[in-house]
Image: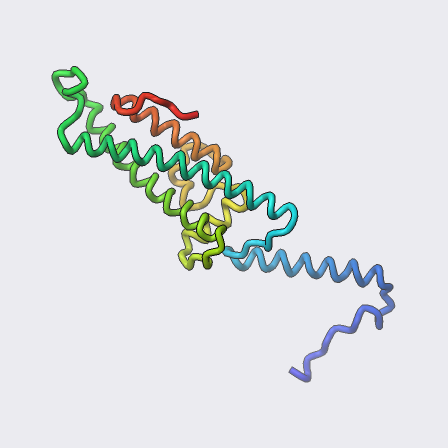
Length: 192
């Protein structure tokens, strides 16, 4: 270590105090950028605009969580009705429609997806409330993407359209779930 050359101090090279400040800012930004690239779980400390961004993220997470909880409750109710024998026959149809099996499968798959999304949002909400960072790679990917306003990689296979803000996709998913439930005659209220 003692044999390695150390870079000379900026003042020795003739830099003024203003140039030194500029150099330090540039080095700080380079270090910060490198830190953000190498550590997916790193989130900047809350200050001024960061606090506003964090508050906005909390609001969006809470709203998405409420929307998903409502949808999950209706999906669970639909699944229970299917298991208890309440189906298309009770809706006044004499024979099951060919699409009935497809719709049941869609309800089950959507219910599983909503459950996974709820776990992701719960994990991030706990972190924002001060809980220790989650060690799961999925949680880190979701937190990083939502913090920057992008659709998280674990959610992308379920998004039919191209890149879009995660909040728009969650709203669209909720609306599609409501529409699916309306097809089944369970929920008639479509959330906006």
